[in-house]
Amino acid sequence: MNTPAPAALSDGKIECLLDGARVHVIQAHLKTHHPEWTVERYRATYPDAPLLSPAAEKRQKERLVEQKKAAEDGAVTQLVDKMPLAAVFETGDVPATKNKRGEPILISVMKGHDAEALALVPDIDPNYVFNLDLVKTALMGLEMGMNVYFWGFHGTGKTTAFEQVCARTKRPFMRVQHTANTEEAHIVGQYVVQAVERVTKNQTTGEDVAVLSTETVFQPGPLTIAMLNGYVYCADEYDFALPSVLSVYQPILEGKALFIKDAPPDMRVIRPHKNFRFVATGNTNGGGDETGLYQGTQIQNAANYSRMHIVEEVPYMEPDVETAVIVSQARVKKDDAAKLVKFANDIREAFKGGRIGMTISPRELITAGRLGVMRGADYSAGLRQGFMNRMSRVDREAASQLAQRYFG
Image (cartoon, rainbow, N blue to C red):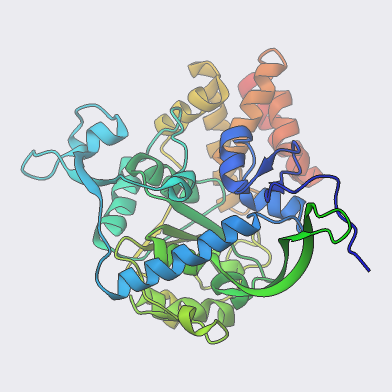
């Protein structure tokens, strides 16, 4: 019995479920045509949808094997320019971009990426306001190959700092979210069943037709891909994962090879590319949640955290910096932005003093500012919808009175 043939020979591509486009690589298509969508969001929305066509998967596997062999043979090259920090981050001639001798600080800017790596370089946000001390801490880790962990309240810009540093220095950046359901296989890779198109002859008509079948293949995880390609691997929400899962990172944090016991022989031992970097972010320092705000975070293994070379608590921004961020991101007048920041800092002090049960992040403040602008500069309404409506009734009343004091 002949297998029914489709009406036309397949082009070998997969369909983007957002717009129906036929593509080989979903990530590259999203970056070009749907920049508001990330791969993580696409995967969460369409969990069964493929991200690579069979041809792209085959190319990726061949490429990973080639890169693994090149790394083992010592043939990995580093394409990099050295440029002044001030020029890369467009800061102007400020003291923070110079060393103690008054000389410009030179940093590495990557170049020569192929299309797949280029798709992973974050877009530069021209409105992003840099905390130069945080930027230099992130750069120190990237330049010296040190593991960096940023932790602190939500919305303080921990992940965005890494992302925008990578955008400016042209480093491919892979952000991996961690949850209590994250498993080792999600990180290093696993065997999956995938559909494969094969061209055959229709025995009746003699025409070429595409026939779908399935096969089991090893799909490398994000850590494996980042290590082989020399990407920056960002372990986001690090303290949400189970300590037993995070133990997979320990040899990597020591600069050693990754051993994937369930991988095929040619992918079992993965040695890090010399441009590979490991960074992580979390809401706690691994000792558990002290605030009650971050349900689901875990008390972590101290041995794992001891392998982080640089640990930095990221506080809320200085008032003048946060005001500049609100002006830039929410298109709010400077005087109104300053009032929003004063409101936010009063809320934060009340939270620290135990008088209310919720703090406010710059992200929420930006949202409130945008809503206020849309409401004709009614920032009390913006704060109510963007922040206060999530508070308890008692806290909401206190915050509402505070907003009334600033905005009438």
